[in-house]
Length: 209
Image (tube, rainbow, N blue to C red):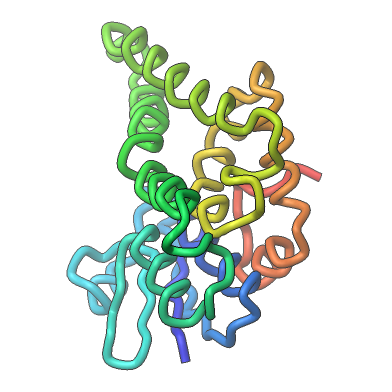
């Protein structure tokens, strides 16, 4: 059975969501951030040397990186669900979103988060970070025009990209991005998302209702 090493308020929440969408059996190994530093607890390093979450253990395999985990679950346990046919052009777009989420989109979001704690010391970096945020969020907004989900039908790409949308929502950046705002509301209303939220515990980036 799959074991998900889940850290509160982290990207591992979307792994739980994917497993609920697929209705797969799994076990949650709960880990809590340090209340002061917000860092992962040291015991995660016993699961994988990086000491990060998510980590999924499947028998004798230990998988890290949320994109790789989502791809692994879909390929090994998904039975063809939540991804396009591999021979279709839509599959290439789907793969692009899986890699784009962490490869490009999250960088300016994380930079804005970290530099926001520096006050005036971060002022020289703010214009460039803001420009990158506008560029990437604008790209996602445009991609969602006229569709409910990133490749049309709901897929694991929406699960992987969800953290980007939720981080943007939490920072108040979706007011001028109606397509993204509607997409975030849409996927947060999915029953499997709500079930995963209940099982995963407190999640600051979740719904505000």
